[in-house]
Amino acid sequence: MTDIKEITVKKVDSKADLKTFIKIPWTVYKNDKNWVPPLISIDKERFDPVKGAYFKNAEARFFIAFRGDRPVGRIVAHINHTHNEFHKDKVGFFGFFECMPDYEAAEALFRAASDWLKENDRDIIRGPMNYSTNDECGLLVKGFGSPPVVMMTYNPQYYESFIEKFGFHKAKDLVAYFINIDGMPERFEGIIDKIKERRKYTIKKLRKKHFLEDVETIFKIYNNAWQYNWGFVPMTQAELIYLAKELKDIIDFDLAYIVYIDNKPIAFSLTLPDVNQALIKVRNGRLLPFGWLKLLLGMKQIDQVRVVTLGIVKNFKNIGIDTVLYYETIKTSVEKGMPRGEMSWVLEDNIRMCRPIERMGGKVYKTYRVYDKELS
Image (tube, one colour):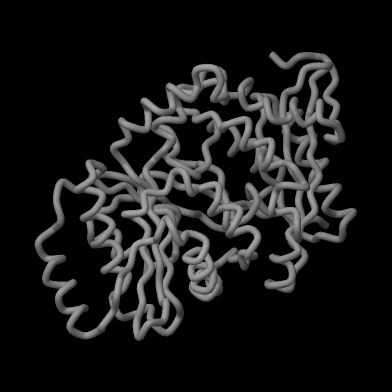
């Protein structure tokens, strides 16, 4: 039964408001054992327009929905100028949507985000995007039986009906593959040998002592490799450096590779240990006083990975380098006691990426949806 108290929506304009905004998920997911709480310290920086790298070429407005004086939902409406300049469009976005099972509150939040984007000359609202395709994105619509892996979204099932009731329609589905390998399939050894014979490539691990130098190399590959993908947004150098610093403490440098041909970087891949297996134990989102100990103990028990990204520059996409990177990743993950994991996310219609994963035994086990709504 819905509370009879009125729904109001408030713009976040103070530190107290931001604290309320950040804490709303703990109310929404109070009894959800699969939810992985974010670290509050990281969220504070992520939502800070001064510290957050995203805001250097973007605008955002944060909203909280109240039922009476009780916070029951939140949303961020944002304009990514890099996206608009690249695609020559007027798409605006919503992200970080969380809401209690109260459609009236959800509707008020969607309305506030839509109205702000219309006022700023946007003609489509797209989401969820937290903040772009370079970050967490998509609404989980299939595969609710397990916690999300590192840097993937999670949400209650009722969000789908709330979003569609407001008038959003599917723009694109993103799929996640699960793979469990006890050992490297023998046929891969022969395939790799043939690729080595045809192409004189060199594969190098990311270097901890020269981390930022290697990040610069990755930056050059990244925007070339993904520019033809749906929803692609060129990553700024500031965003990549911000993300790299954020990930540095959780990267396994044995699972991050750059491939060279004729001394030119032509591909890279990044696979992360699934730190969500540890973070899920830190239920209050705080490392102090005892959260750090739970996190440390949890890190020692990680037994799966997420293949986060694999990119190859245009002129080298069809020479088998993707197979080489998958081979090295799987072999090393198994050796390190992490023989299973997720390959995500992949565009539902990206056959070039889907087929090799399926040949290795990967099965789609989660689907995420990005929605559009025209702002007429």
